Image (tube, rainbow, N blue to C red; front, side):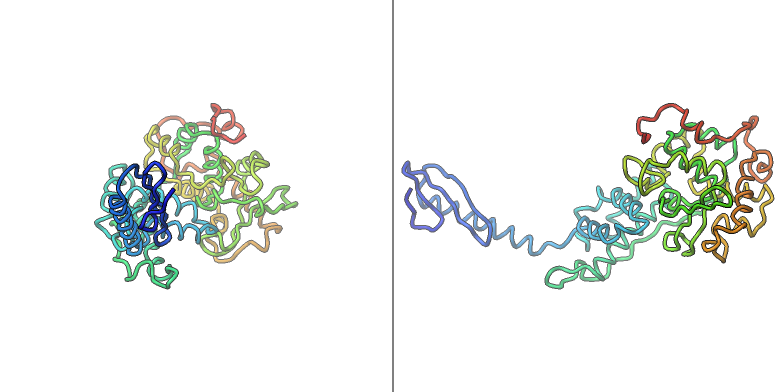
Length: 380
């Protein structure tokens, strides 16, 4: 092996040229075969030019939406909305992931919006995704910096326009609709939505219910769940009263996960509004029924059963005062009786829409849900 006149080029004993050179931290290596040293020099010069061009391109490149989204997710990993934020970002990724942050504005989001509309997604849900884009861009401009202190986005982002929304009126589900829809759901989801319609919990609190929040109340031989203020919408601690159906679901979930009451494949259930829920709604012609309407149904059934305004406010978490410090009092027993009133189909029918056909005589309980066809995805 002999070294040529040009550093980085050597000639082996068979006359074949080899380039082995480090340029600005990048190794350039190539076996060129039997060629003249001048040809090897031209090849090396071309490689140096290529490396130089690539380094300049990287120096000019700015962080993309993927970089900013990943950083935002990392910062938000302990927030109660982390799973929902990640879901929105997964939807957005195919459309804007490789775009530099200064290239994201209304027009670059048009394809995303059109595809979501074509899929039948409402404006409110699309706007939640657009709000995530807004937040990521604002963080990039205000907080995210390169090692040299340069902002990831050097000017404040263009305002991402929201779609006009038409609020939908509440649609409390009837008993007949509940039976038809819930019976079409996989067992793991049926238990979760059945719990929601019997406690009035919002989706985030139902999916995020933790075993550490359970408090035993000996006076009623049952537990309640005390959701801490930081996890509840009103920023006040909320006591979840468990009627007979909700309590039996809690009992059926014990031992399935050490942290989350409702878990799937070892992780917290992030949403009830999944593919199975949407398919069940379509099959039964109940596209208008939203997860939040389960909360509306609980409220309407309480009112129809004669529960006072004050008791309804406490059970739903609307009350201005908190029960969190008094969950061992006689009030819990009284509220439990109120919560059990929603299980009486005849007494809770008066303010609900009456569906066609005779009403079933019993509500579906967790035992019946477990007897539905085996769901391969249901945790054992």
